[in-house]
Every structure is written in structure tokens, then in C-alpha cells.
Amino acid sequence: MSPTGSPNAGAPSASRPPERSAPRRKVGLSDATVATDGAVLVTSGLGSCLGVALHDPGAGVGGLLHAMLPAANGRPGAPEKFVVDGIDATIAAMADAGADPDELRVKIAGAAEMIEFDAGGEGGSVGDRNVAAAEAALRERAIPVDGADTGGDRGRSLRFDTATGALHVSYAGGETIVL
Image (tube, rainbow, N blue to C red; front, side):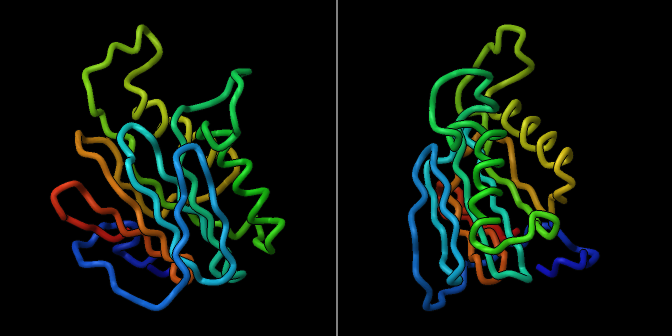
């Protein structure tokens, strides 16, 4: 997708992920990886977790975060465990790699409601709260969301092409869309 915002910007398209020769790196749960070499970053097992794919097309830097919970709020854990803290850590790592935080684009996916859950007055399911936290954090940082595929009741796996900014979202059962 073009960062200029074509009329279909952010609209998912059904397709099969193209194969290209590029390094592949796995991003684990509560983890983030930044690439400057056009690598394809891959993460799987996104249920209520949220995947955040950040890209600076001009600098050729991309990062993928796989976060579990909305925000640390003083709780222990790696920043990448939490959406808000993980976004900040990923942006900082991308800036260290040459990205301009003012040029970042983002796509998000995941945050399914995999089980019935009573949030106990906390404002929705974990997935819903992850999306709300990401949207608020990105809005505060003036980073536009170019595409999103969140919610529902199916898990997802992600393939983020840091050379192009394309985020391939695959569902259990084989369906893949591209943001």
C-alpha cells in the first residue's frame, strides 16, 4: 500500500502472500523486532494479543510488536508485553535504526475475543482494551493507522514485509488478507 493514502488505503484484500527472497525473523509473544534489511517479520498465536506493525518507508525501517496487555501501569514485565509501552520501545528502537518517528505508518491486527470474559468493569475484553490502548497511544504520537484487522473470534498469524509495509494477516483455516 502506498503511504500517500490511496482511496483503498487500509482496505484489506484477500490474496496469497507473495513469496520473495528475504530474511525471515520470528517475533515471539511479548516481543518486538526491528529490521533495516527488508526482512519479513513473522508472529503467530495472536488471540487477544495485538500485533503492531510500524514502518518508515523512506528510511526502510520496519518493526513488529506482539503485545499481550494494554499498559504496564506499574506492573513488572518487559515493555513489549504491553501495547503502550511496547509501542514506545519499538519506536525508540526504530529511531535508533534510522527511522524518523514523524514518518511512521502503522497497521494493527489481532485482539480477538477467544473466550467469554467478564472484564469486571475494566472496559471490555482484553482484545478490546488492547485496541483502545493502541489507538490512543498512536493518536497521541500522531502516527496514522493505515490498516486494521481486529476483533472477531479467530486467532491470527502475521507476516510483515518490512521492505513494502504490507501486513499479511492469516486466519486459522487458511484465509489471508493483506493490509
